[in-house]
Length: 621
Image 1 (cartoon, rainbow, N blue to C red):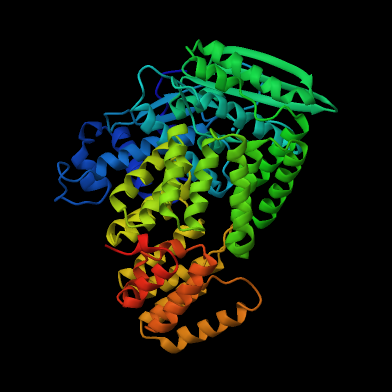
Image 2 (cartoon, one colour; image 1 turned 30 degrees about the vertical axis):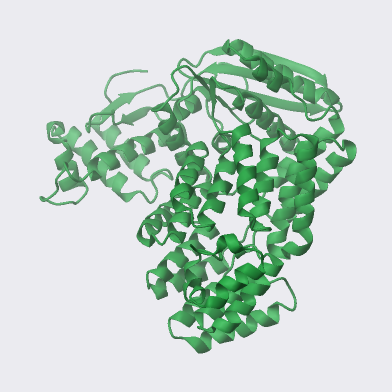
């Protein structure tokens, strides 16, 4: 690094390059702020770069701006620092001029460096088990922002006695991607069970998949002390895995080793890698933790490879991906009928298909399959969490569901999915004071997943805190504009606020967006808003169309009940709700708290409907 300040023309050229980059695209406030502070510094006005000046002038708040009560300048400066870090980690990796905004200051610093950044110290390119219903696709830039934000939160709140590590996705050839991903996930799983080691979540680590970045640079972004990276290759029946550990602060390699084995020794070599990493970290492990590191769910190499392929396709939220994963999990179970995690993930994928194909056939299979996993291993946290989830969405058994969630969280207190699902059940039974902390805990544990992050927004909506829900959904859409569920659910909030044109616009947008594995309601939402806004004829036209479609494909009875509720046809609404409870429609869990059913709940027949369905516990007190 050369600390000599570059020429002013060169700095202005670098500024133009930065603000034109993909990293800064759409961030107009950040661009304005960066241009303002750079130009002020270059023209000798750095002494004027105070919080008031930034807010009043650069950010357009005007002379009435008061930094004591308005944090705009501080917030935007913090965002600008993050964007600059991201720019130089990606597009500006090879830039010779660095523009930084030191913490605690609004005066930028300009330095020069060699044309190419330091290379990694080696030649390597840059089972918590996969629960596919929360593996959702978002733009890579958004995910990296979330990953860095998550790491920043943790790094500012560390457990002092802990070490921290990130395991980056191992690289490989395209046809072996499933194997490399599986090896990476298994190492993350093994290390995550150690009490004195903070391990970057799988969802965060995998945001860097396929990115040619220095592991040390990624480690600094994530705020961890150590980074593990690797490469996997298969030639015939021979498996080669090269692994390295890098000190994120210095970039020095602290350990590196090549493992060459037969492919059928994959399970044992994964255990060996995990043991090497913990030894190099000099962790003090309890007897229970050592036992956990050595635990195997299968000794069958063929079953394990089928299982890894199932995991790989489970992470692709499409009907084809889910169908393929089911096939691979069945093959894994055929090869080893005692392989408990394969049963859990098979059950999850049955549930995913049931959303679009109807619950009556697939949900009993899902429940029986996850119970088999518990029969094989009653200490498998994810099995209890999935059973709790199924008992709620299909059985509407709040007590049984809660019992399973508590057991899952006792076995694994840091399961983001268990906290997320528990938050759903609590919210849908009206226990909002408990639901929101559970949802926020899930976000702390997995801040990258948009699906998990939106649970807070959903519970705010169900709690009738519409203004708060609106703010949450707007944040989520800014982060992930292509995520169909948040676009659709923002429409629900607009509808409650009486902003019907905006609600219709959101539902129309969701309707034409590519769907993931779950069927996203569209027309029923539109029909409901048309009905409550006085456009009964248009609403009934959609209802007639849906009734015709229901003869060709599964249509949740709950959706039809909502349209009748919007039309103020209480008799028909109650009739369809009875059918929805009988078929256990996926959204029937909302029956107690759904704001759109408020008018129907006033009818005394509503509580009788719940009693007849054996759901007296859901009757409002």
